[in-house]
Picture 1 (tube, rainbow, N blue to C red):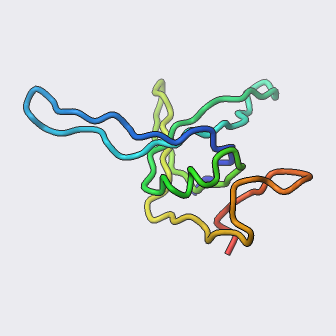
Picture 2 (cartoon, rainbow, N blue to C red; picture 1 turned 135 degrees about the vertical axis):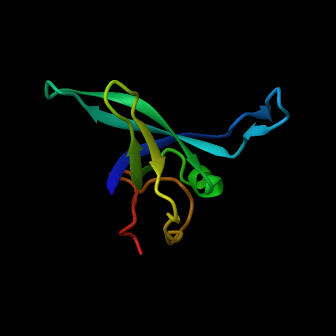
Picture 3 (cartoon, rainbow, N blue to C red; picture 1 turned 45 degrees about the vertical axis):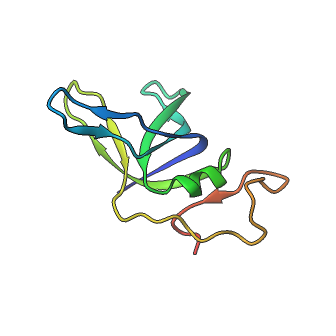
Length: 115
């Protein structure tokens, strides 16, 4: 299992529609995270990763907070890498005080270790 750390930037409903054959596709929710990507030469850059989620309300409540998520990765030689939130993941319980405003001195970090 890999852990992805990023700041929640956006949560939105994925477009849905029907194919020419009448089959439905799409739907559900997407979350966009701003992540610091390490490059081969040792430097880094920021990038947005988009992941599907069943926990749209939790991500909306924690927008602009840094989170750590267990992710899986799909990709191969000469293919784009695709990240996905591990099946069975559930958000950690709400923190005392609620809200999504980080405490002074730094952002709140939610992870699987917060129990």
